[in-house]
Amino acid sequence: MKRLILTGILAIAGLTATANAQIQKGNWMVGGNLVGANFGLNEGAGYNFAIQPKGAYFIEDNIAVGGYVDLGFKGAKDAPTTFTYNVGALGRYYLNPGEQGVNNLLHHGRWFFEGNVGVGGMSISKGGSSSNGLNFGFGPGYSYFITPNIGLEGLVKYDANAGFGSGGYTNKITFGLGFQIYLPTSKAKQIINDVK
Image 1: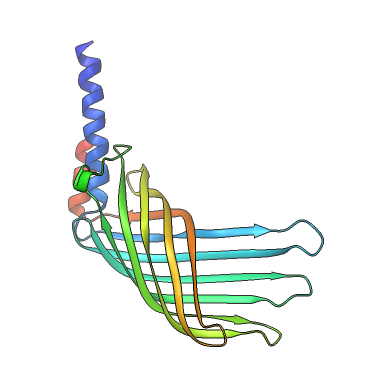
Image 2 (image 1 turned 90 degrees about the vertical axis):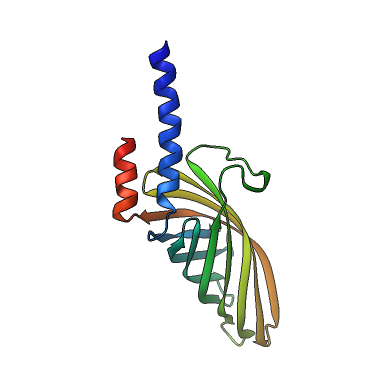
């Protein structure tokens, strides 16, 4: 019985160490979110699809900076097509377990806050409106490490474009679900190997 309890404690400690190893200074994060996709099946129904590839470098433990690209298409049969784009810089801060009263729900995941700023715009075909301008957003997310190097993420974000042109200021709340791959340095690899 003692051996079973000790094994359980070591497994929990190992999962926590694994999650910490991925967000250490010097590591890279690459991946993306599928913001939303729907393809209508009724006559006259349309499609709506957006992706968010992103990459970041951990400049300190728990702090990453990098870049993002958002691309989206929306349309329907015999209707204008809307193309949206955003590109810019992003920053992430991962909360430590128990930081500011926030407890980790699972020992091998982390809460984080993400913010971005860049340029973006929207263009509607067939003589529709268009805008270009400042893109910015911010929101909380959770990264659940399904393997030592892959995190499944959910992100809720306020996203806005302060545009010039006929589109003007637009804003929305987005929910993204995607994967991030964490490319560890040799120090992080050693921590993961020690846990195994």
